[in-house]
Image (cartoon, rainbow, N blue to C red; front, side):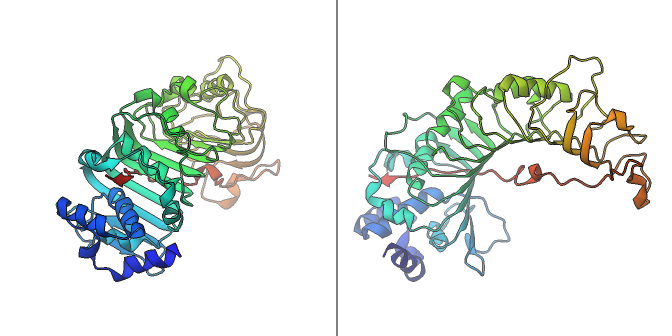
Length: 405
């Protein structure tokens, strides 16, 4: 019953009937609206904040298939009602043009009982939500997570977001969305090092993929971080100030028991052995490790380190290596040494026992296709590690929600 009703609201009512730029008039209109229409209007009003390309004629655009909807609001008096176009989309993007939502706090009840609106939120087909470019109070951010706890949302991206202030601990019944993927890019938090533990309280425990780029702090307060029981992929790429010491702080010991894939592209890593020591300190048993796009150096004579026993794929491409580093895992399925500064073909005794080896893009190679073939029968081939999947992605930003009082 709810979905046809919402579709009717989105397609039939005129924008002026849905939202109004005059706050007083908007309040009177909302009070007169039917329950479903009013709740949906408030949800979308608090979620639509954006910057737009000057070439975009309308604030919101829905693709021909009705799957992807993008809203960009940069006008000083944006037409918020255009957001109703997105009620039937699966992939939804809202951007906010650097707007602050502080003024909404006076009219929002962030502790309202949302169970009576659960059917309305469940009717939204949103699977992937991106929200970006806004300054949002923490009570609003966590309020919208409460609301989305009734949705079928699976992937959330927060980008260019400044989270201000603090919020009370979540209510007992206030569990957020059951995400499998969360992307964060350039998100700052007033709570400093405690932000991950605070955010984690509003998410169900099934998160499988977490990527954090351009973070203002990865020195987590590990005692406040709960266990991520299902997290299999952690991407900390594009944090050039992280370094190996920072990695030890970021990999809170015993908090990532299911971790299989770790991406550390462009994170200020210096040596493979230093990364190995950080992994050992955190007791993580990886299967894939991506150290590409770091300036690595060999540390001959450095103390040995025991790599994770399950590690089978190591990406050392684009790391400026002039020779194969010593102390690599003894056995690997995949080793990527492409696009480095190797001026000669590595000898077999310099390499781990490896099934697939990539050496393309190094100076010693010639264009002939057979120049990458070993007498041993091992052929060097391009390696496309699964760590390259949705890593430096757009992380976006969720804005506030709840009910106007």
